[in-house]
Image 1: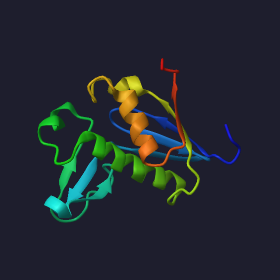
Image 2: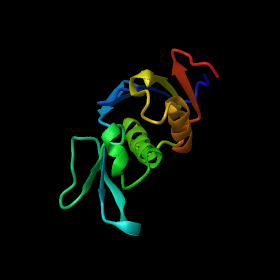
Image 3: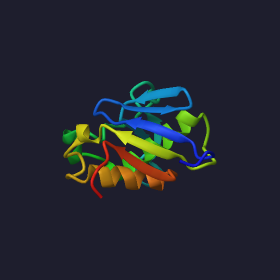
Length: 140
């Protein structure tokens, strides 16, 4: 690992993703709150701790029942969630792309049609991770 590249530990679980970096730990439920509609729809809150005021749509994107009614795709929801979470664990938008060490991916098996590791890796790279490493190591 490069000395200037920060690392983030991500423990994946259906009820909460746990992010750890430099002594800071954030546990965030995989939930988005969307406000607006159509082209004006946006993510207003992330996690179950703070629903936005006014009308909103709650998107629990890892729940199987959410498949029928999601207003955005699961992968778009995952990317928005990860973008928020990484910024929160760094307490700002990060300037140096982190290496993310992921464990617990098996806990969400079947959520993305059996391609959970690939979807999570692609989403993390898309939101700014430099590299993604899975533990236990997965076959490539």
